Length: 305
Image 1 (spheres, rainbow, N blue to C red):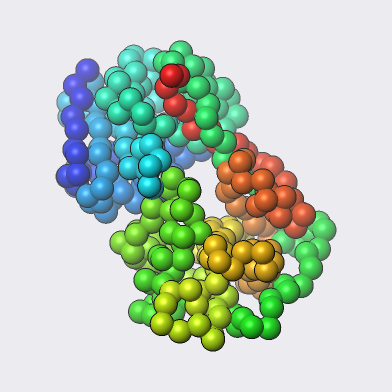
Image 2: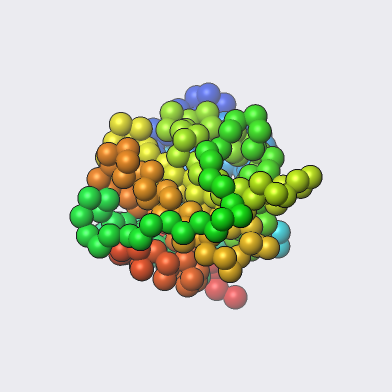
């Protein structure tokens, strides 16, 4: 098994095509994408802050791929990997895993039978689940109604403005998700990657702003970034909801979540989903009270001490 590393170096165009191809094959076989959005963007964008791991069983045919990203703050690095369906059970996954840092935590986004297979592989490799990411959803046309958004009078609501709000949002996002290993590490470059995607819609990026605050980034008190991908689909996403730490306790999280639901429903969408960490009990409770229920669970694994 031939393993090649690209530490801080972009993949070559041919390698990008091969990685995306085996990711598509794996999704067709398993029913769920093996790479999350940020990892897929880093395959295509030449992100200098990641390590790419390529496994060749018979070059130039790519048998498997893994990627490692540094966590925010003191969080351990996170990783994702995919093995081409034709090369499974031939040691490719084990070789990729062995090439990862010992402290890396590995995501599995598999569902159904594929989730059981991924869990069995992880445990056989000495990994144990350490984190659960719940996919919750609800109908936008049926089910329990949500209340009107209660935004305190000191705040105003507007959409994100390109060229004005990038740095302010990055700062507030970092503060709101300081303990989150992925979201808290987002940079302006990461934001601009998403702004270049076909689904980008600034009208669906809702900011709650304190107009009385000047001279700092705290004027963005809360935000709800909604997403519709594909843009002509009928399902929206509660992409990111955040509240500036010094504005917590004012009900802004619930209010801005409802503003986003109102926006998605006004677009004529029928369904909405979101991703939330199991340990974020307050957020899970808020979403459950707004009619969201569990649909899937994704797992992250770490090596046993």
